[in-house]
Image 1 (cartoon, rainbow, N blue to C red):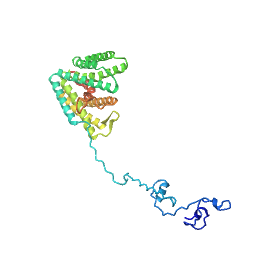
Image 2: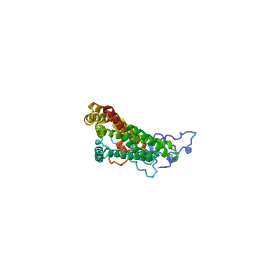
Image 3: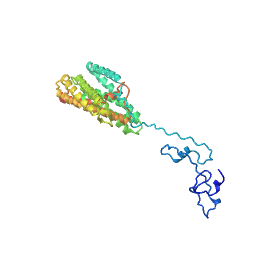
Image 4: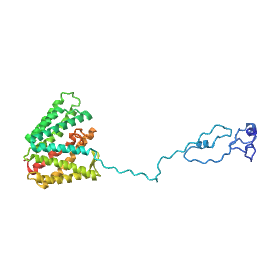
Length: 373
């Protein structure tokens, strides 16, 4: 490069390395602009076109690919940036189809069936050998259920429902119902509630109303409802009445589970128990009504098949409501099961959920249909 390229005015009509043409942006020649005051300019080099790599990038990245801006710039050009790899799958490419998932029961069915059969053997043996032994089985179930319920209330909500008066009053309630009937059960319930109020007075008054309310609820929910099982047993054909009560409740639960697991699509109460479906409820009603017609006709003295149909329908409804009520309590407490005593089932309260509200329904309908015995 010669010296004239820096100071002399360029000659028009020629573009080359030694004689420069008019440069865009240079000061116009004229009397107001002397040659020695003209802007110093440098020519842009002629470079071959470089293919555009596309993208929404700024122009600076393309300039970096073309090399130095001035011919005498000897700084190395940065390496071209690697084009980003598109890791997203093409829309028209076939996507792998996930394998169909098998429905799961959600529990260990082997353990659940084994424990259920074991409990059934104990209940049937005590039911038909000596009535008093079965009353003892009911008392044990009531006391354990109260322990599970009060324990979960204290763990999850800080509610201290007094267990001692509840356990003693619950046992007395079941025995009084068996010996004295409904009158004895109501008296024992009232005395148990009074004992809960007095027992809680031995502790500080903070949350007194909350604790005694939970205690009275527990007394009604577990032992008082269980008292109707003892009242069923008190009849002359009491063991058969209790057996019908147990069979219909189990058949209702089994029908709801089987039909709901196989055909269930429409949720029954998704906010309370997402696993229950309307199809399952239909299965519970169908199975329970069929079993009720057979049981009342052949197992209950002076019973008729149509009475069994009504009894089965009532059992299916009460058992479902009882299950939903227990689920409501567990959702409020934020737990899945009330306990872990029974493998595959949870706790005692998880097995009593549909039995407890069904007992007074069966007792009342059998009294209406065939008398108190």
